[in-house]
Image 1 (cartoon, rainbow, N blue to C red):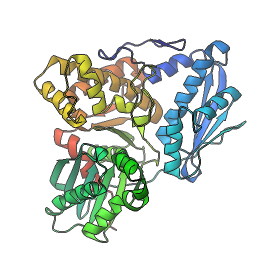
Image 2: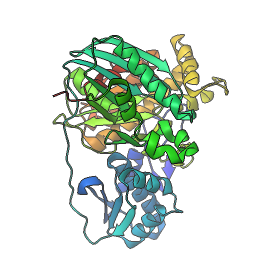
Image 3: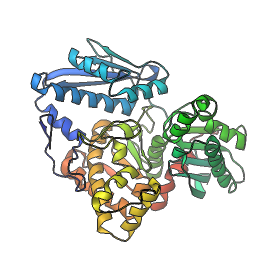
Image 4: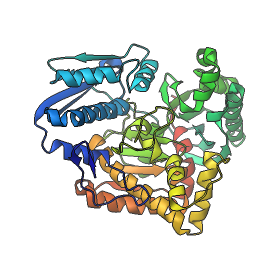
Length: 461
């Protein structure tokens, strides 16, 4: 593989996507001859800072590669940790390139607008002689098991709910819904309340409600969420009054003044893994409608990082598929979600009904896999190669010792193939992470584990 003059040697290449260039391998190949120091830092809420020191070539013939490398590195850290301000040091031309990319008309305007919405302040790119020092914090979350609780997981293709009594799940339910393509805000509200009431019917009382939700959650409100994007586009005037308080209103209208907590679905995935396996330093990856990732650190806390890895680049192929929402190419959502299955199925010779929903298309491929169709096997093997390379990348970033795989894509025989192949790729390409423990829970936990863990979010004390 060669891109921008950087030769990327690979042992494992996905059969259905031979042009795939794992970003970590590109970065490592790029850095072999890079000698000029540069750095950047990203500032997020509370004055927290993520600093990164690296190198570029600094030669005319590698100028484009230098710019590409730094732009990708910054985007990775931005979507991993979040932020509203980028500091650049070491090279004026690199700074000018980054500043242009994050301008109103630049290539990364979506990222700029997204972060401004999350942090509610203007996005900045500045040049400095010396980077600010790293500053971070973490906090404990969840693991409260006492009493009668409801856990709700708001997915893009279905909503899941669990009723839990003193840590034991007494009821779980999955209901198909399509919030991403429905602009009727009453539809969203009614669906959430319906799930609450189903679970409440199996409890003598409700002591607390925990909600696992896609997007960036601030004070129990979805500041940005793919579930509400279409509704927000159609009703921008109702974002503040109906969308942001949606979960709060659904809980209080249904149960009154009781403890509740809304958390990002990726963090709840990681929490589910930490609780079920009794371990820390764990990444949770839910491969469903999108890719949700969360991290529980070595102390059992969440970090407060953004962890929106669906929009983090993982592929350096210049012809990679673009994500419809962010407009960028090579991002995780097109590799580790149902979008990845749908993308690869036609390449394996599987004809999908174009009128079907994405969830129905995934179900069609899964049905073929349960029949051991060799075409479906190729799809899941290719996703396994994706995952192996991406896990190497994530380990490089987080230093995790465990990973828990959840979501609809990991269901059934396909999930078993993905796990097996990803292990082979991880061991073969990234032996330094051979001690990473990959956990694939039982079928029921794969599908509703997040809602069960979400029930532990509110503190009733």
